[in-house]
Length: 291
Image (tube, rainbow, N blue to C red; front, side, top):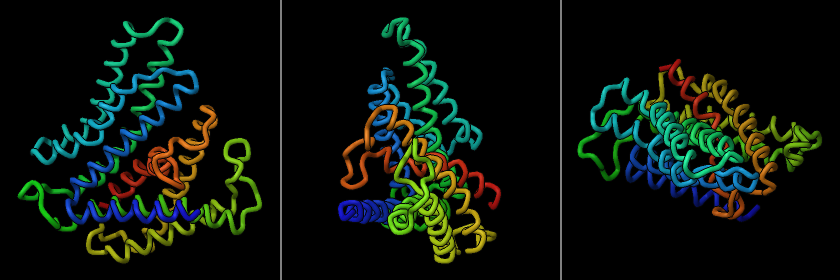
């Protein structure tokens, strides 16, 4: 538990420090890096489950899927091109994998390779790229291209709201489960998760969401009051729990406890980002509706 707390504090220090120094550019870089590392771990678990995804190709496209929409906006490309760029890159990744497997796989695993590679691109970088899309709802490129201590941007605060409400759902669920957990939520998928922990995680998520909305009222949409933020945090918390269970399904199939050992007390990048994978597109829809 101590290592998990220390790792969490260190990670938040790195994130907030990077955002303070480089703003949206740091946010996109961190998201692209996490997407690449998480996909690397997902493909590793896929290989342990008997699949053979194209790891390097997938990671290459993962970075592009997350980063390209943002930098297209920075360089003044049309909004339609920006919005469709991630989907087109996923399609190109699937096409590249389809062509490559004809020469590098045999009839016993060609389908598995294509499905594993394509699923990885859709499940991690494509879903996470909605955080970048959320950032772009209000982002306007600054001059110069990089600024030391850039101005605080509404899209950046919205992304921080999503990350905090999602991650603190995990924290609330863990602490509530340890203190009050009695009834197993999904014993065949994740035996340690309880309904009491899930309820605690949802409540903590709603509280954190409301608190950030009160603090960042000047940088969030006008309708996004603390009450609305607490209500908006509810579906995010619910899909966060689902996302965590989906990761547990994948880890059980690969017969591993953690996706990696990169972060003491937490595990790997996939363990770190799992709560954001499904919450990112849900959050984007919420802010798109309120903007």
